[in-house]
Length: 253
Image (tube, rainbow, N blue to C red; front, side, top):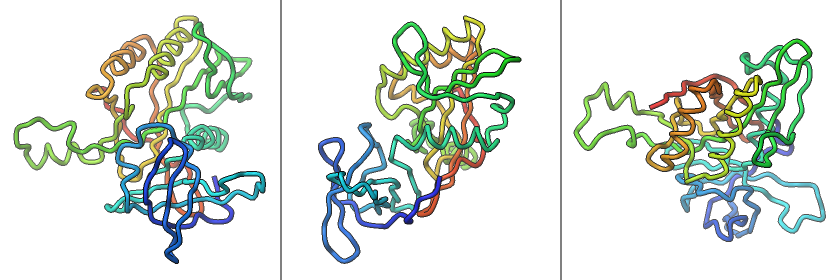
């Protein structure tokens, strides 16, 4: 995914009303831009962070600028535009980056499925194999300390928690529903995949956030036991493009 024109930098003042963000431009002026993220955005929206924003050529938009990437004081870059995860997943499937999903001759998006009135993010189909239902989730929560105990850790243990990403960053009843429906697809003879798109440059591995949503964590373990596959692919983020590039480990803790 390429940004044309390239993203521009600003300083985050505050995020509010779910969809709006105030920023300060390099010349000192202030502007309100759109934020396509209704989630908690834990660790992604600290005032003073660098905001990288895009500009739409749609003259009808009230707020022509959109917040795409947050850059933290540690230098980590995080894609905060939730619309990008599915786009990046489709792109990575079509260009062969996600090798586990090669070999299908048709790709559709937002297809109705399941018994709980949902739409699957991506459906892969082929005449020679069962359909593959793919639910895409964006991972942006980095928490190096959560895997630690209250006891002092050894250097080796500390190293093992570095780069630890979690999903979800808030309780997600919608995500729980998707896990039930993916399990249903496997039980009906189809293939089902939960694809975590890692959109945080500091995350090197992913786990379910039991400490945030214990029910989601339990349902994910049950889904895996039933045959739902879990894939994690990490993106490279810059002011000119975002692309899923490499697989990272999923740790079912």
